[in-house]
Image (cartoon, rainbow, N blue to C red; front, side, top):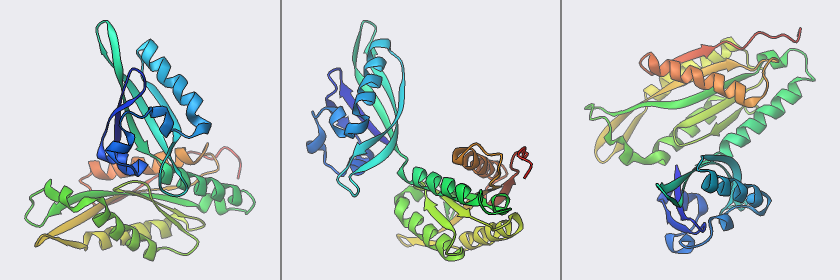
Length: 269
């Protein structure tokens, strides 16, 4: 999660390492630059208006925009939330929290395109399946929980991505949405087959042993599973439903697969 502090003039005074990584720049390169200069031209006016409202009205500002980065294709999509730093009688600047949603948006687009294709193929829409996977409990074999952060996202994430990719068909889509969050789109799979695949993935992840600094780590996942329904308003509704399954799995002690029913189909299909 990126964090940036700017003064009342909009100049950057502090950027945390996570946001520097998103931008692909150093502290020296961004400090005292205008925060708006890091926003894509197409989104700059709207962002400036939102930040000004936050300052003058002392309210939160939430937005989705493109930040310029040194990495291809030159920008990333982010969700932002800006809050004012203030004394009783004056504003001192703003704190903005930044979350990279580029991968999430790509997956949403893939799901949207799948729904559009399914509209022209009888019965495929009802069989489309979305699965969201989250890293559950990561622990030392000796139960010294918490120190797993030394492993870093990439150590775990790349192993997961390769495992998931090898388990699905060429027509399926696997996406890494964040450090410990993954999604799969399985068109025409059917719920029974998807549940079998999810259970196979759960057991394969449970069997993984990650070696680090002479110690062995065990890993588990929580998997939420749902059908793509003709009654869904869009990709976010489907993803939220699958995400709900992940949280239910966590509440049941993790290391589980939970299917969440799709809403009733009122289209008559």
